Image (cartoon, rainbow, N blue to C red):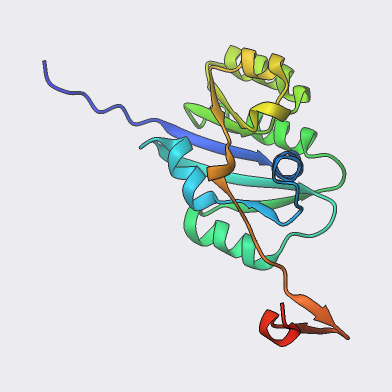
Length: 174
């Protein structure tokens, strides 16, 4: 029997606020960010990426980050009026007939009903989240769970500011 290559199409929908809060909690800093260049290939595991959507509530996201997501993964940042739950759920439902697998990057139990619905539509649903902050019921309902660990994020150094100017560490003596 010859090897058959099965090509799965995957959409990754990220609840940015949930994932950011989770990694900030574990890293004890608000300067931690997901390293998408490490995490995305791990989540895809040689499957094809159809869409990468990063849902973000509230304050605007850096244009540099949005640009990198678009450049590297044709990803989009979607700013939400309030919580990402409803916009992410609507988009997941719209994508259900276009992809084989939807990976929801969130540990929020609000997505349990969405997972059940998508599975009922014949879509494989995977959750990617920090285990410590992810709802057990969400993990249990998913077809697969990807644990986001400290290897999947980095801590960036924010420039020190003095009178509106960024100061290099060497100038401050630290």
